[in-house]
Length: 291
Image (cartoon, rainbow, N blue to C red; front, top):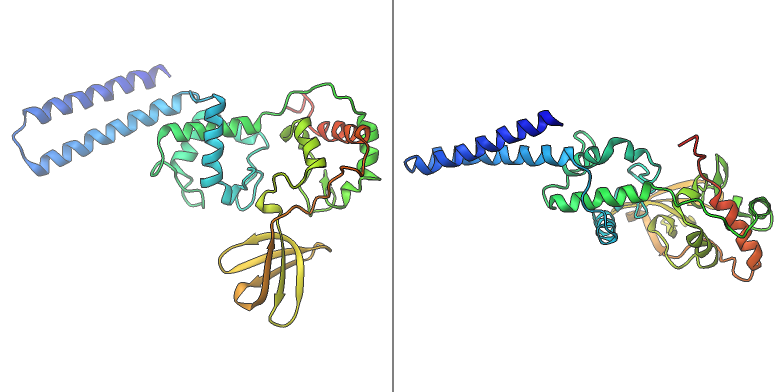
């Protein structure tokens, strides 16, 4: 750190000396352009060093909200609007934080050469990059453990039985694939959010959980989870978990269904049973030793 500060001071001194030289030189357009370019390069290097040595200074709730908006616009297409993965990796697992604030800043600002990860620095300020870092850090921080009114053992019995949750959801590799993997859902969702998921699943439906209904030119009809869609093609997983791929030019009918396939448990479970199921789902998190 001290070496970087000394080096940074030296580089800034070089920039000031360059500026003085510019004022004392005869006006020569070519030479002026060369010196200006050198000065800007040093300034850019100095800014990057300073950014890489610091933790994000933008940590307020407003900064997190700004970071979330930026994420959904610039990153959600690959990483999912909820950051749980798609073409890009899941960013909610905690592995993202292993790179530190500086590492995250560098990846977001510069991208990763040779991959689909583009740089953001060409269109956004350093502040925007730091707000994205703050948002990703907040995503990776598990909700605090709290005492809940429900009974987790009773909740597990509901999950496996009356609730039939395993027909759509997977825990540690067991269960269905038409809903989110719940193996560590307690790290991503607070108890009140889990309760809302059970009672009001249509309140906020991420695009990755939309479904599709199509008819191919040969008369084949398929309906299921919309796994991927772009300008030219669509991939669907049907109710038997078979994957179908279609070119859009070959489709006679295509309908996107932007509602959740998750049923509401309002009226299906008692208030006490909902509390039990929430207690079980919230318990699906790593132990302190594993962290």
